[in-house]
Length: 121
Image 1 (cartoon, rainbow, N blue to C red):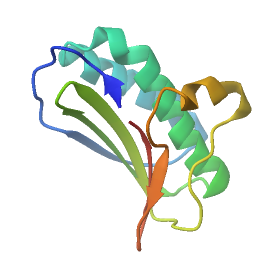
Image 2 (image 1 turned 120 degrees about the horizontal axis):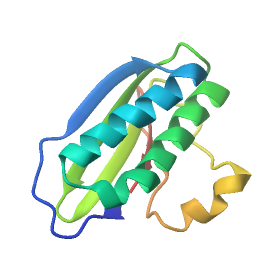
Image 3 (image 1 turned 90 degrees about the horizontal axis):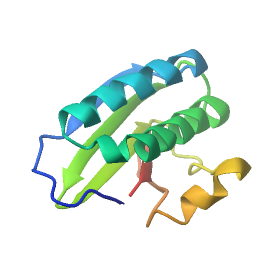
Image 4 (image 1 turned 45 degrees about the vertical axis):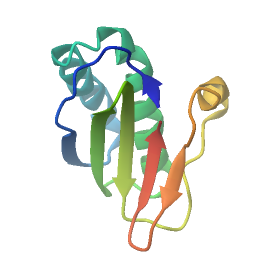
């Protein structure tokens, strides 16, 4: 999880959208606004990178037009960023350019019976 020391508990933010490559920039801006409102300015860049990676994985490996849910929540002093899609066939993969990102997180994804979750935690 992304360590967000001293943060106050916030209600999780759920955002449902359709995965499209041209939507990633808007999603990053919306996430930035949400984190600033939560007082987590120092964590905007890494959270935006996570969202970009996870949504790009959905677009590349599942396909544009896939219904997706973004879930952002504070769990104690940690920020969790998760993207769920309905395809259970494969877990997300990191792009080569972001392999250093993988070392910062405990998990990168998990499947279930009816959907898959990619997460930065």
